[in-house]
Amino acid sequence: MSTLQKFASVFVIAFCFLFPHHGGGMMVYPLIVSAVVFLYLKFVTKENLSDLLFSFKRFEIASVVIGVAGAVILSAFLRFAWDPLINIILPREKVNLSDFAHIKGNLSNYIFILLLAFIVGGFYEEIIFHGFIFTRLEKIFPGKHSTAIAFALTTIIFGAYHYQLGIKGVLVATIAGAVYHLLILKFNRNLWYGTFIHTFFDFIGLTLIYLGYM
Image (cartoon, rainbow, N blue to C red):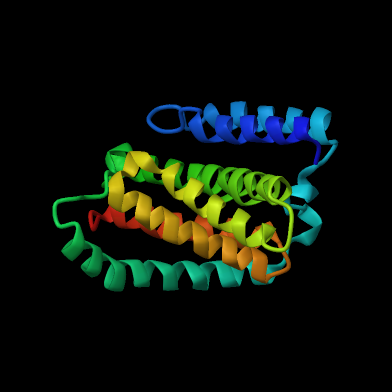
C-alpha cells in the first residue's frame, strides 16, 4: 500500500466512524458511507467486495446455524454473566436504548426494525468494520502482527462507534464485535459468519426490547 493510499484509507476509515449514524437517519447514512467506500475501492485501490472478505459465492448454511447458536450463547453470557459484573463496577450507568423505545409493544415498528437490523447491522456494519476497516488496517500496519493489530484496533473502533448507547453499551458492543470478528477469522475470513451472528444477536436484543425485558 502506497503512502497516498494509506492517507486515503485513514480518511475513509475516519469518515465511516464519524458520519452521523444514529437517531432518525438509519436508512440514509449506510447509503452515503457505502458510496464513499465503493468509490475508494473503485478508484483508489481497484478492489471489490471479495477483498473485504465478502462474497455471495462463499455463503454457507453453516454460517446461519453457527450464527444462531453463537448469538444465543453470546446473549446469555452478556445477560447472566457480564451484566451482573458490570452493574457492580458501574452501578449508576445504564445502556441508552432510547433509539429503540418506539418498538416496545409495537409490532409494526418491531418488524421494520428487525429488517433494518439485518440490512444495517448484519450487512452494512460487518462489511464496513470487519471487512473494510479491518483489511485497511492490516495494510496500514504490515508485518508479522498485522492481523492482531488490525483486529484489536477494529474491535476498539467498532465498540466506540456505538457511543450513543453509553459506556455500558460501548462495552457490550466491543465484546460482541470481537466475537463476530473472531468467527469471521476462524472460518477462513468469511464475512457471512459475522453477518449472521451479528444479525441474530441484534434480533434477540430487539425482541427483548419489544417484549419489555430491556
